[in-house]
Amino acid sequence: ALSGAQLPQKMATRYAALLRERRQGAVGFLPAAAFAPTGEPSAAQIDDFYKANRADYIRPERRVLRYATFGLANLDTDVTPTAAEIAARYQRDRQQYAAREDRTLTQLIVPTQDAANALRQRVAGGASLETVARESGFNTTRLGPLDQAAYSATVGADVAKAVFAAARGAIAQPARSALGWHVVRVDAVNRIAERSLASVTPEITATLLAEKRAAALADLSARVEEQVASGVAFTQVAEQLGVTANTTPPLTADGRVFGSPTQSIAPQLRGALATAFQMEEGEPQIAEIERGATYLIFEVAEVTPSAAPPLAEIRPQVVQGWRLGEGAKRAQAAADRVIKRMKSGTSFADALAAEKVALPAADTVNLDRQQLLQQGQQIPPPLALLFSMAEGTTKRLEAPNRLGWFVVDLDNIETPQVAADDPLIAAARQQLRGAIGDELAAQLTKAVRKEMGVETNKAAIDAVRRQLAGEN
Image 1 (spheres, one colour):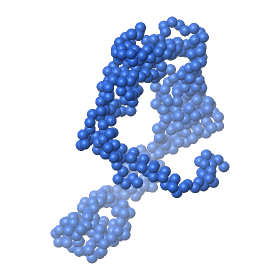
Image 2 (cartoon, rainbow, N blue to C red; image 1 turned 90 degrees about the horizontal axis):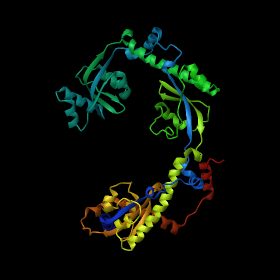
Image 3 (cartoon, rainbow, N blue to C red; image 1 turned 90 degrees about the vertical axis):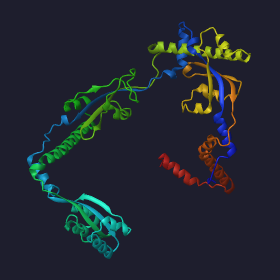
Image 4 (cartoon, rainbow, N blue to C red; image 1 turned 45 degrees about the vertical axis):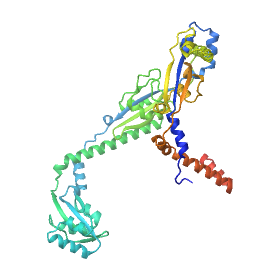
């Protein structure tokens, strides 16, 4: 059903014509602020408005956190590596400091010993390994630098032994691995002398210091976590660590400081914020900020639930909302009057000017659908309405947040003829190919279900439902 699914040519042509469609009109805006009453509302008016719109003034949950950070500076043990520890580590890793030899190789693998010997003889006669391999239908591989142990782990001890016995520039005696017979040229030999304890002491010291710091810090964090679990107060834990306890202003779950949009929270708290909004008050938690270096201990000091505040606390804000609400009602009535005047033949500009308040002039619109779509997902609602109206009609549209009303007037729709070779037709067929395939698949599935019938295993469905719901 999906094979070769294509949008029919006529449909694609119609769709392309739709994209070429041009609409001409105008959009006027009647702001609620222009019609808002200027006097003070009565107590009853403001109370009734607040009760009806309380949900608009609900404040988010806020939490005050106490926190402190501790890390390497707070370790209570000496983690400096001793000479004995450095010597012991040197003995443990003696093999990595021993003298060794690294080699760079060019390798060729063939299926038989005879073929390997023949290729080796040709190279010994003066031909290059790459040329011999290419003429025989094989490819060479460049390897290294690597030591005998690393090479042996890849190809086996026999091949590695033969290769590391050959001189620089020579072809090693062919040897066999699980992959076949290896013909290997030694391109370079790098001999590395043994490293003494004195020469590697700084390196070992740095490694041991990092390990001992991480272990000591992990031990310290475990002890702090044990104290927290046993109920020791946050302030006591901070005091024992010798760190400063900090307190945040009220924070919201999205990481903002409540009432102060420009203020930001401490960076070390960002990763812990989601956890903090799931915790109970007075139950400290520990989190790792920088792996092996810094930890955070924090607790919820205060929780302010999400709720609408008392009217007295936000009365100026509510009064402003009441004014805009009343202004929006009057703006709606004014929009109806403007539309009525336009239907009787008055021009858009004169219909707006007839209102007793100063209103912004209407904006003219002259767009095709392609230009409209170029605005992306944020198409202004008045333009979206303009492109869904009938020609010669006028409609009103409420602006968000009770800010006023739009009056949208559509004067003319032009739909040009689309040439048969217009690239928009091909683009439309390509763009809608997936949608056509989905529709055909859905229709076929529906037809199969209708013709064949469907049996439902209710017991199995109930079992799966119980499993997904976590029921016994």
